[in-house]
Amino acid sequence: MDEFVKNHQKIVFETTANALEKNGFKAILVNSREEAASKILEIAKDCSTVGIAGTHTVRALDVLPKLEQAGKKMFDHWKLKPGTPEELECRKNQTQVDLFLVSANAVTMDGEIVNRDGCGNRINAMTFGPPKVVIVIGKNKITADLESAFSRIEEIAAPIRAMSLNRKTPCVKTGYCMDCDSPERICRITSIMHKRPMMTDITVIIIPEDLGY
Ligand code: SF4
Image 1 (cartoon, rainbow, N blue to C red):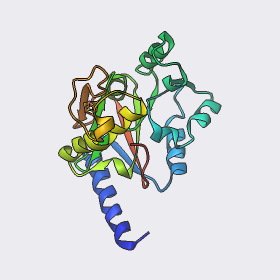
Image 2 (spheres, rainbow, N blue to C red):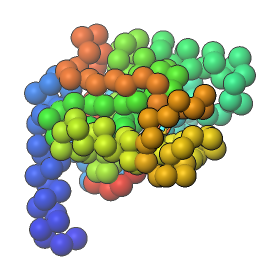
Image 3 (cartoon, protein in one colour):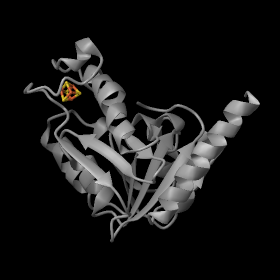
Image 4 (cartoon, protein in one colour):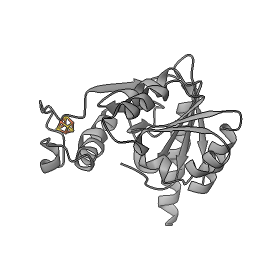
């Protein structure tokens, strides 16, 4: 990697991690997906149940089979047929687990965590319920401030998510948010964690590559 790119990345990561710590979160900088997976296994050591949000980032670490092998009871609604009572039950159970694994739409260099949901199960479970939450992000999720966090959601995360869900929303054609009134709109709830929620132990793991969207 170019030395200047490397230096820039180091400043961005360290600033973000320090700001997160200042806001009451734990922040861990790792060098690889493998190291991120090891940290998760370590954090999960005393946990019996693990919930997984709808996240490509966490699944890319290949840590879920390892947690299962370690005897954890997993609550992963992506393994169930969407819209079924079982899938709904699984989403509800994710708010009761010992450890919830999730990514974020954006993490600012001021140490704030920003998410926009359709159902709200992810935002619910990551703010209250599970005593431990691990948020895994690739470098692409870091933004300078809240304004750029919302731009990231509206120009990248939400339109791509709408495409992946085959939604009939304007953003799947324009590539950016049109603040639609579509019945299929996926953007219905926005959460900003300014500081760590009082009853939740939250660790943010930052990986130096682009992961998820
Ligand atoms: S509000 Fe509508 S147009 Fe905007 S990103 Fe969400 S689904 Fe797409």
